[in-house]
Length: 175
Image (cartoon, rainbow, N blue to C red):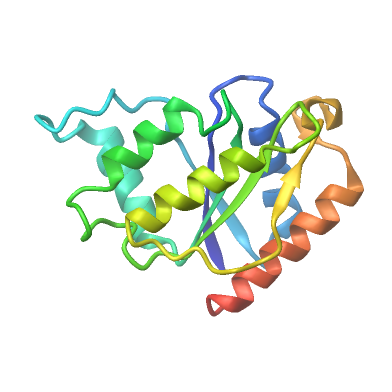
């Protein structure tokens, strides 16, 4: 099965991206996770179409049978850059590439709660666009930066749990 992975962080040393990329390596070839890039998207403006970067991300979302979001928590919610990407791809309203699209949400944070508020907010946003957020075990990763070394996520317990969650998600959506 092929999934699209989106990290909610642009930082070079992002624990979200490190986790996503490490999971992509672990899952292959059983499940491939292509990375959707959000850093080159312009700020959302309904007066414009967003150009080639938006068209590319929309095409990636449309082609994938499911999405895996790995988001940090910023100020008790999702990062603005992730919300911006979602806003671009959520048009036309209720008929966007997100409609009916199965989505798995993983959250990370440097604190003890693992980004649970960001995870809840992202699920709420996705539901509002008619994406499918199937019930599954919640994957929340506290103190994530401590588990990143040389751009890769190193906590084997978290990785094993996340791999199990992605496999369950893939099985649920038909992979």
